[in-house]
Length: 353
Length: 70
Image (cartoon, rainbow over all chains, first blue to last red):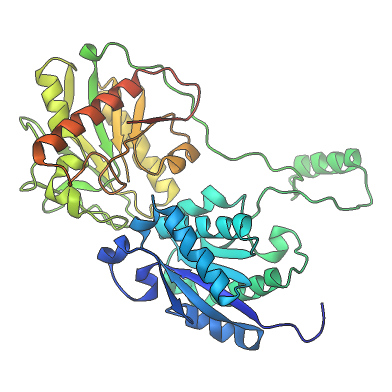
């Protein structure tokens, strides 16, 4: 690499919220490309300084993104071509789940279809992290935008390295999340000697680092299928933030730690007069208008009356999963499962966003 | 006890180890059991179909995460 390195052209991917051009309602907006930087992209420009600049910003609503990937891809490809882009930076998404998924998608597409280096940043709890950490470069962030000032210099430094195709060291050294890839490296000891060293370190309680990390995807043994429907006792469990007006259990729209059980006894359907949804991760307008669009009580009650199923449990078990910490969500899931079982359910329907 | 998760983000459901997953095609992630574009009667009929599909999914033997469609 020569001393006077070429200035790099960066395309930045944002959603309308981070771009500062709209709230929840703007999540349905299709892709648009702006020249130059927007919102946090200005911080990228500051840190890039003479190393390069944000030449274009692609903005797309999270709702629109899901299901319209090919339209977004076309907009991205066109912008890359029009602006001579060398590097794609998406995010940071922090704990914003759908934006995180979109950022991951953008990076993977840039890598694979456009042969462009790309990097994003998001929190460990963001579903986008678990989903794509093995395929793309993701820098870890805190849960909230408060960590923005700390993240941006790392993003820029790492991105510049990628754009100049500099060799990268192991994930720990470079600050990206391990992708589970191994590179050959010449070392002084044979594999047998290294393995024995590790075992000895382990029994002595000393730190050691495995060379082969085990797959950490969660596996759940599938329960046996449900028998005849006319014997089925069905429970509805949801993370959609379904609750009665007044929110008696104070379920939070984000990073929530509680759940509730809400009676639907003697109801043929769930009405908007009584119920609503609280959830910071999706637009609740449609389900607020008709709560059966989230928890399908009307259809299940019909089936119960017709004898198609034996019973619908007369409570809905509900929480809000948006930005939830895995440990809390696991606890909530276990508590709900215990209660659902205690109520005699034989199967569970889980509407989820 | 078998469970079925009804969602449009089926990849996330697979990732977390859900075994029976139903992806209703006309819904979106912010209304898994709704299609507001339809007239009320037709939407209810559609929802009934989606619920029947969810119940059918619960009756399927599976060996790991499997995505069913409606």
